[in-house]
Image 1 (tube, one colour):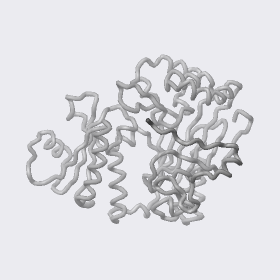
Image 2: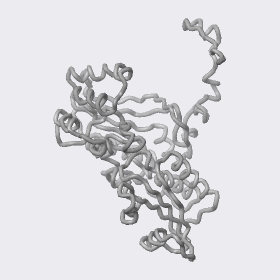
Image 3: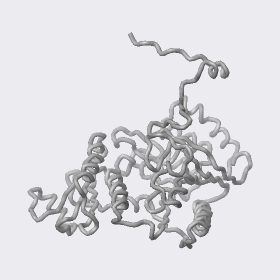
Image 4: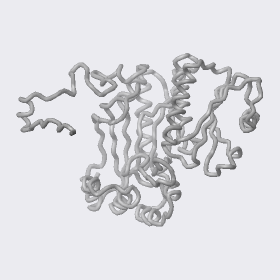
Length: 376
């Protein structure tokens, strides 16, 4: 954008350093779009038109446009909250997830997997969670009886409860992970069928920053990436003034970002944002809010320097091409639509990579392999 290109798109290979799942691979392909002088609606309209063309051509389905939009807070509040039952912890809320008896009954192996999610949550201090199977017997715990009464639960209903901080952070999604796991399980069992309707929606207004651990630790990170613009009707110079006047971690956590995700039947297809184009604002976020180290800032300094020469307001979005193809063909895993998928440990089994470089290969690149020093 700084160099004068008004807009572009590219099909790019990307790499991620995280655990593999059925819908994730360490090497993947994305369709990346960047545009100058746009707002979120401009980008969303283009993507909606693209999805409509794809669905018409591939599935002969006419998608209903425009797609629905909800905010991040609306999405997280879809898990019921019982704020009046936890007065002893005013900074916490109780969240509940209900599976009605006529939906499906869960066997012990499924519940054990849910317990494993809860166990990891407890061990990491993310949130405390319990599971309740409603029966005709009375519970001795008055809080549980109160919950069952308030939610009008019936015999055979299954209830999951999580106690978490009110502030939304990536660490506070225990019930979100439970919900995603149960959704996948119910889909496999045929209890729910996503194939009848392709339900697209946009999730918007994410918190610009998230607290990685808790309020006391004050570890602030970018929710999307550190180049995402704050969501404000102010210009970016005025936004800089507003941020500099934010005195507490709570103030910072309440700032929303111009970040948007495209979701289909609960699966993220892509995400994008309006970027920061003011060099002073970008530098302030790096140093004063994210506390990025000097070494990392030095590696990113060319981006701040480029913004200082004048950058148009701009934004973009990237769609996961592999995931989109997997959804279109009904594949359960990205491995089914990638030519050479990686194993769980990141290895390419066909090409046998990564592998130890031979002496000739090292010589070609003028490298020397030094043996590890043994610890005495």
